[in-house]
Image 1 (cartoon, rainbow, N blue to C red):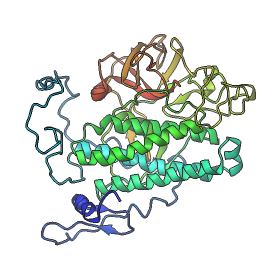
Image 2: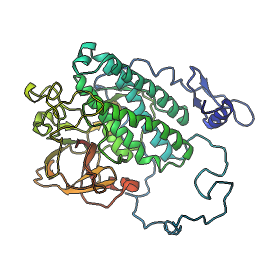
Image 3: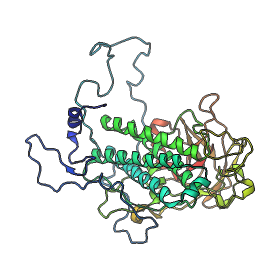
Image 4: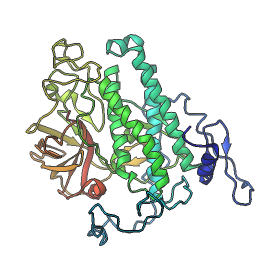
Length: 469
């Protein structure tokens, strides 16, 4: 057992009000041991396996726009490095007294203070609420695919009873993840919604899962290091690493090379929300709202289609918007890789697959189109896409540790073309690989993994997922 009963009780005492995994509401008592006379929070954990409905939203929103308060500036100003950022002499020696034996000085949360697993700021709350929206959709998504398709359809896609059980187990993992985040956030934590999914076949379902878990994982990496609550960050880290394993498994089920990169990218919260929101149909009227931006949707018109022997033969009927899955129905039998018996062509479920013809390559012409701002999206159509950027000029490729720009050319209205760059993270590691992110920008702003959100005011449209490998 990792934690004793007493340590768990004290650690979660700060969650006021809180929801525990047991099917009962719980409100921790203040110092006077008097429970406040307030209604108990709704019990999320008893609802996580309940059925949800599916399909598009057809009602009228009662509110629109992201959650907002007084806005102090149009954007976060770019500042120089902290003056103390380079003062530590990185020479392998100890420079300060040790607080205890075998314990070097420094670190955050290392002074013996009892941890409190709560949120400490609006940034914390909104970031973890976004993560909870993600966990809820994954819980429903994994169940939906298993319920929607027959055993025969799964087996025709090369997925056995054992594979289906693994998907069910991953859904069970989401019960734990959603309960954990509900505990941390308290009584107003977002609840499960209804969803609208874009897949029609087992292969499209699997591809959608590998894409949704990709931006869910990257969306957490983008804010985890910025959380004020280091304790909450610790617990979230221990759940998102599980999601990373899920993403690899869905890539294997999708017939893709399981991990073609050396590093996983992190993305800003508004990027994750832009990709997630279109699949949420409706939420309860009193649902906690998010403050993150929804950018106009970006479509990759000639998205590499891993259901084909030659993924680059994809037609315009196989374009994908945002994180939509591959299109299997448009692939002729002669170019389907699922049942190919030729080495290097097969893309059936496997521990690993190594394709002879790469999904993409440097120098490839990539075509885009994008929506204009002002479209109603997300739960109850109550969020509105927006951008503060100027005219479209660049494509930013966010992958691994890199944010690389290429010129957007042949611009006509809301469409354009670019050339896939030839760039490496380190020698021997082509940066543009795996399931990665592209967006249209008005400038080629220099950003890095820790401050990638500085690019948001310059995003014209996107992101979209690009199936580079």
